Length: 95
Image (cartoon, rainbow, N blue to C red):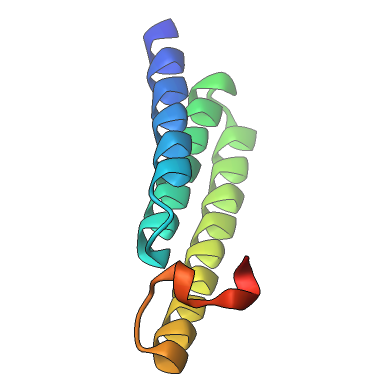
């Protein structure tokens, strides 16, 4: 069981490293955020015992993650329509 904890922690740290090192494109940032959320879901799924509360909490968490992904993709579409690319350095108001 502890191997799953270590796997989820390494997945989360890999997502954080990807988020910090790949800051050129908005899509790569969104993918690394989704990977981090998946690692947190895996950790919480194994941390909380198997019960009805675990299933309910998992569904609520996945709902929030999906809403975050949809919001990020809609922002990316808006950025591409305004500037023509998803390069983050082309936006001076972000930095």
